[in-house]
Every structure is written in C-alpha cells, then in structure tokens.
Image (cartoon, rainbow, N blue to C red; front, side):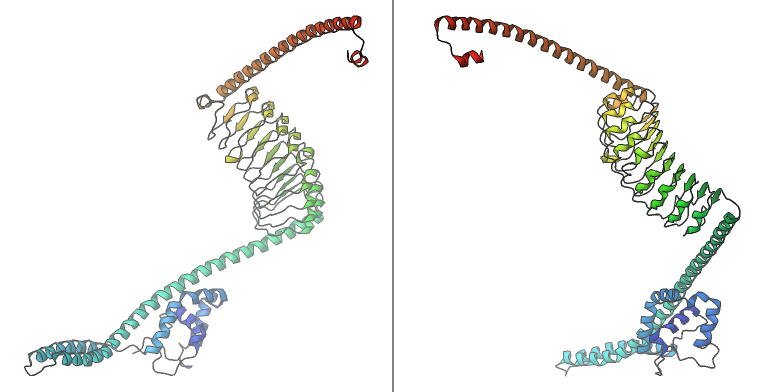
Length: 506
C-alpha cells in the first residue's frame, strides 16, 4: 500500500505540492507515491484547490505561495526519492523480510559450524567466503524492503511537520494582510480627512490643522493655499518631503513636522517670515537649508534627533530672536562663529554630538541660562576663555567629555546653581573640590583666578620698575657719553687736523 498524500489530512501541503511544476505531471508508473486523482473524484486536485482557496484565500497570493514552496523543499526532495524507489511495502511483506533475515543469520551460523567440523575440507576459508557472499546478496534484498519502509515512515512524519509549518506561514500572512488592509483603510480615511480640510478651508478660514499620527505619506500642494493658517501639526506621520507650496502659508506661526522620514527641508521654508516655532526633530535631516536663516521671527528651533553635521554659517546673524535651540543627538562637530550673535538665546541643548570645542564668540551669549554640552565624549576637551562671560548661566551640564581644566574665569558665573562635571578627567578643579558641589567649584576657580590676576599685576609692576631703572641708566650713560665726546672733540680741535666725516658722525 503506497503512502498517499490525502488532501483531507494535509490540505495546505497538497495544494502547494500541486502547484509545483515538477509534480503536476503524474507518472503512470505503479511506483508513484500518489496515484493521479480521478476527475470524477470529489477530492480530486482541481476540486480540492477550489475548496481550500475558498476557505484560505491568501493561498493564491504569489508571495505566500513562494514562501510556502521554499518551506517544503525537504518534502519535495523526499517525495521525489520515494517516487523512484516505489510504494511502501505492506505490513505482511515487512514482517516476512524481518523473519527471513533472522532465518538467514541462523542458517549462516550453522553452515559455518558444519564447514569448520568437516574433516575432509581443506579450503575452509574459501567455502566460508562463498557462503557469506550468497547470504549477503539475499540479505540485501530483504534489508532494502525494511529501509524503504523506514523511509516511508519518516516521510509521514515529515508531512505532518510540513503541514504545521505551512499553517503557521499562512497565519502569519493572514495577519500581515490584515495589518496592510488596516493601514490602507487608515490612509483612505486620512486622505478623506485631508480632502475635507481643504474643502473646509476653501469655504471658511482655518487657523489650526492637526494631522498628527495619521500615517500620512503625502502633503498635498493645496495646503499652501490655506492663507489664514497659524498652526500646522504633522507630527508622527510618514512624510518624506514637504511641498514647496508651504511658502504660501505666510501667516504660519507654528510648524511641527517632527517624527517623519524627512531627509531635506524645502528652500521655500525661508519665506515663512512670521514663523515662531519650528520642530523638525526625529527625522533624517543631514543639513538645514541656508534659507532657514530668513525665518527671522523664530523663537524656538528644535532640530534634535537628526543626522546634522553642521549648522548654517549665518544662522546667528539672522535668527537673533531665537530663545530656545535644540540640536542634541546629531553629529555636529562645531558651532558657527555667528552663534554668538544669538543674544536672545536662553536655552541651548547640544548634548550627544561630536563637538570638538566652542567658538570664542560663545561668550557673547550673555542671556544664556541653560546649557547642555554633555556626551560629546572624546571630542570636547576644552572650553573657550570667554566662557566666564556667560553671566546669566544657571544650569550647566558638561558630563561625559574629556575636559581637563575649566576656564580661568569660571568663578565669575555667579548665577550658576546646577553643575554636572561627571565623567571628565578634570585636573582643575581637583576631584575633591568637584565632589563638594557647584559652590565649592565656583569658589575654587574664583580664588584661583584672583591669584592669577594678582600675580599678573605683580609681574606688571616689576616690569614697570625694571623699565624705569633702565630709563635712568640710559639717561646717565647718554650724559656721560656726550661729555666724553665733547672732551675728545676739544682735544682733537687743539692738537690734530679735523676730519669732516668724524665731525658729521659726532
């Protein structure tokens, strides 16, 4: 009796195997594992396919079928081998083969004893060899029956495992399809909402639009025509671009395009002259367009969580009203010199970048109250001498850097109340002072600076004294020299002829 692949027991596996080209043409040989289905048989391949696809519609999807085909490569290979070897031997044949093998082994032992005890046989070894060859040939036949039976047993287990694998693949595909359908439905819903907003804006002025978390992939150009719009929230969508038409939102005050897939911003963003709050965080931006400097009304700029490597050169010259600048978690290596012109800046977060220092103009930020420069790691090793000019600074985080010494004028930061210097190889001030807190650090640096100033003043006084001494000596020496020259001249005038050249030099 052959090992048949019954569609009722293995519905998904049967369907997938029927789709394989190498098995669609059934052999007429009696060695086929699965006999060709009868057209009148209600369980035939075509009827089975229609029935299972009706119950499991995703089976007809090419990607699902391809995934399932790859998952049953072992079944297909084993099935091909069994088609060549023939049908599974029945139970009686297997039992007879086992019994016959036992008989052959017993008979072989008796034959060897008889040959060994025969007194007239001279060539005992030759007879034993011939007997063993005859027995081995017979045993090979019966062993092949047992081996074939074992292959069919393994094949049955393989079929069960394969069916279970295919069912799991189908369930996964079904879940994915449901998720896709849900997403498509959401997109349709969003599109309808977008259309509704545009229609509403055409009839009545809108000042606020919130499309956050809508899985929006495209912002229509028509949004640029909503003239009265003041706030546009596009947070947490799937936008890859902002249309140039956004320049039409001349009255826009707040724009949030954070948590999207933006790699660039349009140059036209610079035409939003009234924009006060711009949030472009959590995107894939590598640069900010130079035109962003024209947004002269900006008060808050959040460009954190991107891939920025630098800021526009003139950003400080033109964005003079910015009070809060967030550029943390980027790859910025240096700040432009113009940043010192952001005189309104109160809050600056630049942690987790690759800053290798600050420009000397940084000290011009006299209104800065909060500064986070932490976690620039091995890149940030020192601070500019002008750092002590940040007279309004209240909170400072310099942790996780490679700073060896604080600026000499650090003690002049009289308003500083919170300070984090952890994970720095500080020498000035020493570790025991740092552990005592911000007050101790300011006092230590203040005393150190006063001592340095006193030393400088002392050195200056000593220099002045030395300069005065040298001046007195030079005066005395010059007077003596004049007297000596006069005496020589008089002597020469009375006893020697005069030399015109010598007279000129004297």
